Every structure is written in C-alpha cells, then in structure tokens.
Length: 412
Image (cartoon, rainbow, N blue to C red):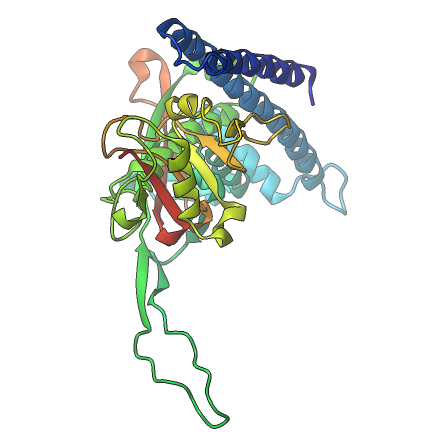
C-alpha cells in the first residue's frame, strides 16, 4: 500500500468514527437526530464519500502505472526478432504507424517507410468516409478503460460478435417437473411443460467526437494515443453505464432499473420493510433473501451515494451497523456481508414506489460488443480553432438475462 493510500484510508476511518459518534450519541439519549446533527452527519458523509473516490482513483492510478510499465516491457520485448537484435516486428511497426496517424494524419504514415503500415491500417476508401482501424493493442487498452469506468461491465458476462449481426441465446422459459419415484420398469409421468425461448442482443452504434488542440498534440509530453484513449474510454464508459442501469432497450441496452418482461420484471421488486421515503433494515433483509442463496457468492449491492448516506445509519437488532467500511486495498465497503457498489446513475428519488437500489449477481447481465473499434481523424473541420477532431465508434448492447438473480429495492 502506498503512503498516500494508507493516509487516505486512515483519514476516512476517522471520518467514519466521527459520523457514527453523532448517531450513537442520539441513540444513547433515546432521541432522534436534531437538525444540526443531521446537517453535521451529512457534511461528514460527503467527506467519507469524497475520500472513497480518492482511494479508488489512487488504486486505479497505481494499477495503471503498473500496467503501463508492463506494456512498455512487453513492447520492448515484442519489438525484437530472434534472428536480429533490435529489429521490429510487423505488429510493432503497425502500432507506431497508428500513433503517427493520430499525431499527424495520413500524411505522417503514407510516405516512405510508412506506406506498408498505412495499407495495413486502412479500412474503406475516402469516398466512403474511410477511417483507420486501430491495431489490436490499442483496442484492448481502450476496452480496459471502459471496464474501469463502469460498474456493471466489469462484472457482466461479455461477448463479442464478429460476422453475425446479433447474439442469440437459448433460454429455459419453463422447466420440467421433478422426477418421480417409481418401479424398476417405470419411466415416470410424462411432462410436456418444458419450453425454450431465445434472448437476442444486437449491438447498437455508439460514438463520441472530441477535439484536441494541434499545439497540445505537437508539444505534449504524453503519447497522444494515451490521451485520446483515456478520454474516449471515459466518455464511452459513462454512456454505457447509464444505459446498463436505466436504458429503455430502444436502440440501446436494457437497464436493470427498467422494469421489463424482456429483462427484470416487476415481480423482482422488493418494497416490504421500507417506508415511503427511506430504505430500512427490514427492507434490505427482504431484498437479500428474495434472491436464492446460490447467487449470493457473486452478488453485489448497488446504490446511489445518497442512499448509502442513509444506509450508514442503519443498525441490526444487536446494535451493529449494517454498513462496513473497507480497510483493504481494492476491496469495496460491504452491506450485510456483500460488496456495496456506488454509482451516480442509480435512481435516487426517495418517494413512494421509486426504485432506489439493487441486490444481484451481475454476471447475469450480458453485454455484446461488435469487434471493430474505429478511430477517425478530422483534420480540416476545426481548422479555424487550430484543433484536430477524433471520432471513436463502437457497437454494444446489453440486458439482464436471468431475472431471478436480481432484486430491485423499492420504496413502499
């Protein structure tokens, strides 16, 4: 653990102690929190949540630094041929050509030694709005950035389609009855109830255009492909996160908080134990135990931070807090023994009948991506502002495929 990470965890632990001291003082005096105490509790929670985000950012930075060092070592190793010290492989030259394209356009790789690499990267003609397809190394890194920026993608079951337009998966819509105890020559009762169906996921287009100063491209100390990669990854990741959570399934993924017979129906809504304005201890118990125990080992809680602020005040029948702060690197806080994840895109309107959280095994959310990741460079469109434009495109779809693995927390 780095010194900074250790200091952040210690600071967060102290803030949590201060926050709990407020609720415990009121509990000891057998009274509700005063308006002043509620305000102070909320202020401290903002500090706790802010420190959580700093800790996660620090952990991502440490991991990114480690990965960058590993990538550089791999690049150096892969650039050498067994029979010629220092000679580059075709893959290494292609990656360099792609980076030259990002910084200088087609002209930067289209002449001399770069002509072969340009042909290798070219996909389509200028009359068709041609673009360059990123070599595999760049594409893999970009997908990784998307994983880091979202919650569900990192836990979902992910597939890639190459030639087909969609992914179809058979579903068991109605199972057969249990077998019968019978005699030696018996075959049991006939069952005609088993029925199969199909779920189809079809990747939908997703695009983002960003502008970069020509001067920044020219003088930046960082590789321009790294800058573009990070921003494209973040913007694509956030858009997907919203759709995976609240998407309506119309030319976009179907979200887990969207009631649908194609995903998670209202039959998986759990409001028992909650009030019309707040999540309660009994409501959380009802939600967890409405999901079969077989799903618990991989299940997570998912809430908006406004909900987490209220949950931090809840105790069980023995006076123990339900929410437990993480004390180890890379581990999230927990609630009723399972990881608690926080997303800004979870619904957070605390009124009658609204969804405010979820408990479930998110490996039963399926994501399908198209293979191609395209980067198009615009050199003339923003000439007046001395900028270059970059358009990133991908195709993706997603939906929950097994509703019994989820329980939506709903207010009464």
